Amino acid sequence: MAEAFAAIPCAQLPALLAAMPKAELHMHIEGSLEPEMIFALAQRNSVTLPYPSVEALRAAYAFTDLQSFLDIYYAGASVLLTEQDFYDMAWAYLQRAAADHVVRAELFFDPQTHTARGVPMQTVILGLSRACRDAQAQLGVSAALILCFLRHLSEDEALQTLQDALPWRDHFIGVGLDSSEVGHPPEKFQRVFARARDMGLHVVAHAGEEAPPEYIRQALDLLKVQRIDHGVQAVRDKGLMQRLARERMPLTVCPLSNQKLQVFPDLRDHPLKALLDAGLCATVNSDDPAYFGGYVNDNLRAMFAASNMDARHAWQLAANSIDASFAPPADKAAWRAQLDECFTEAAAPGAA
Ligand SMILES: Nc1ncnc2[nH]cnc12
Ligand SMILES: [Zn+2]
Image (cartoon, rainbow, N blue to C red; front, side, top):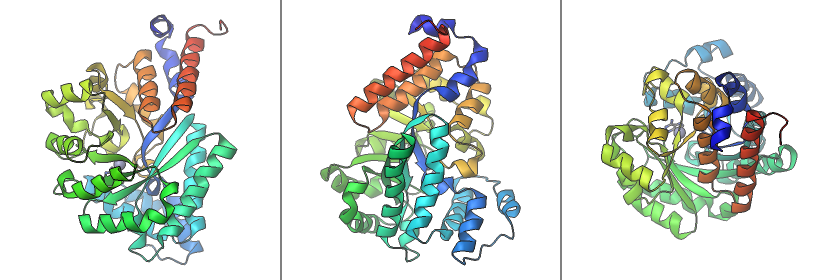
């Protein structure tokens, strides 16, 4: 691929970023609820919102940190009541993903946000799962679910949530850890992650979004995760950077999220290029696209506009995302071949 990279002019990069096949590995499906859909579902379900209009809600999306976002995000999710609501939300996202040439989407969902309001686990999982099935059949997008534990709640509650989800074990492929990070270190969840691993579930965790590199080390050593979600605070620890590169541990980085939550308020200061150049398996993702100003291609476009990354970085990001996914190996091989074809064609149009 080396000659192909050199032959691709910078002007062609935006089109290539949009068209290249990619996996999205870090997106919270509740974070894909656009304000218009929040209002439509509120009306359908007779839920009263603390905002008078779509515009007023959107105007409240001025976040100072992770917690200021989470408060609004959990309020937005309160309109989800029926299986059809969960289906509609996921289907809307999956259509957007298909338009962005996402070939594989691994969707986080937060069951505790819903069961605490009296929505049955079955309603949540079956609605989301049906949308994933339809995405494969109708959009050609491979989609899977990852059940996240809310880290501001106790480990006992996480254990109970895993237990409650077991009748639908075949509908999700793994577990994750999200919500308020600082003060809720990975070590708090060692038993529930051990149980999930014993069940053959994949394991991932948010670590090093706002909290120090020690949280990333704990996620690796105590939770034995297969991917780190965010992980950007690793740039503060040279030894950890070397370890993440050596172990090819995937980091699911979310640039617009980091910008909106003031982790890196200016994308020109974002460490994505540094992570890639240091040999880390970084990927680009949207986190909560309805809240942070864009879907996965918007994240790629913004990041490349703010840095001097080139075609090699673009290819590497897409290749990393496919390699780091939990899709079957045969699917991953097919997508990697499509990716190389895409770049070869960009370098020498019509030559293939
Ligand atoms: N960026 C984020 N960090 C932690 N928890 C989340 N839940 C939704 N988005 C999140
Ligand atoms: Zn996240």
